[in-house]
Image (cartoon, rainbow, N blue to C red; front, side, top):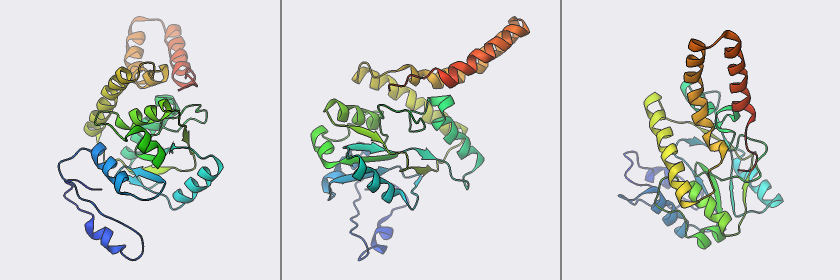
Length: 247
């Protein structure tokens, strides 16, 4: 599926003619939810896998998914995003800020203790059953998490497949990263309204991590050194340890 991208992939698809069963669709002027739903309607098979355009897929990804599904059949799954050694320092820093336990609590697949995992569409697998039962993605901010929550509301299971990771090669600078995180914050508000009770303390960790240094400056200016040390200790404990296990 492709929209108004200036770099079309039709020739790339043609290069695989006779090697793979590949079909190319170009639908201009539509949002990504529509394109994803259209692609899944036209696709064959019992499972669909979605990636973001800036993801690099490791050679063993499909094998990892196959092994995990054979062991634990589920209707919606996802994996973590990692940074490859070849990434720029900025890309590695952004990946850390998006995936680290210290900044987001590992809710994108970075935590080993995930009782309930909401797959995200940068690395997401969907069964045909889940797609047909939910009607696919809705046109909204945070549509992938909304889809994961509706899958669970329909009585189906979501699962984290830790070995099915991708390298998320984000095309970012500070300005783009700010716009991205700003959108994520707005999405959380929309999701909370659409799914009351879905907001957890862990979702506030990014805010706490960002505000911590500003509070530290205030503390250092007005308080005694011993209190500064105590604040630093408590801040570290809160960021690194105060994470709700049920997400």
